[in-house]
Image (cartoon, rainbow, N blue to C red):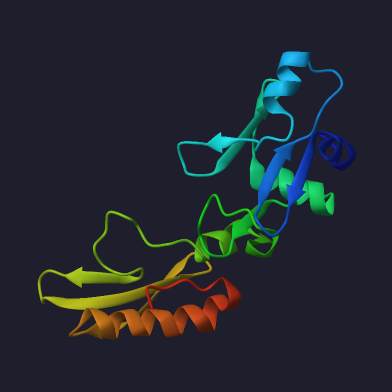
Length: 167
């Protein structure tokens, strides 16, 4: 990844909106300058993140932004609200991979809230949370809401600021 100085030569960043813009670059042709200078950098990738391409390499915009602002390259950067293209500075935070997965939404194709599973043999709902790579059984409940509430309470206790639940 380019240095912080190189990124600041290439882009302007608007922390309140999360927009990264191309700066005018002297090495660009007149047509290229007219087309790109001041425009929003990047497009959505297949996972929903903003991707910026230059020097034959694709970069995630939130990683470029982090380095543009702080000058570091953390292992993971979390979008607090889980919106992958929301690159406002107050929505980004340095984290571990584990913290990033804790803040992830539930599986989109699954009709139940995160941490809740239907027990087909009983028709009841089981609540489970993963802590330090181990599943902790939180109980079996008569309703989805009870199971989701148990998960939400446990997520807050075990995951703190990275807790994410359906409630």
